[in-house]
Length: 119
Image (cartoon, rainbow, N blue to C red):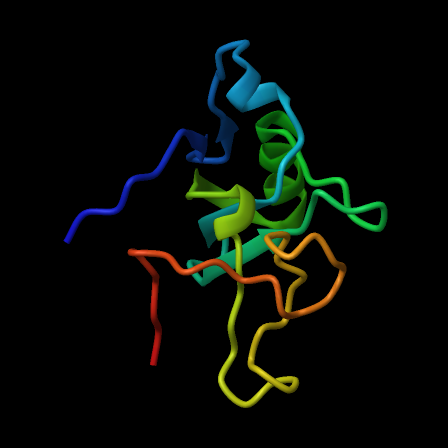
């Protein structure tokens, strides 16, 4: 299976040089997968497109992940696709604030073709 993803943000505890494109510098909701320095998997979502959460650009996301303890980090699809679901949590399992309904609630998720599922 292949997921559309990128760019790489951190590799071996070093920030990867990112180009100066609007994709990299504009703030949006972001999804990221990373490996911690303790070799634990990290899945994270940064909310955005709301007064309460403006999102992150990829430079900020790389910095955040490094501070959080990631040694390797990869940006995933973001924007309205950024949704984190945890079975049994909240009323519908969505624990972040997806932006597709333009409200700061847990109901704005978007139908997507690709997911990362962990059992």
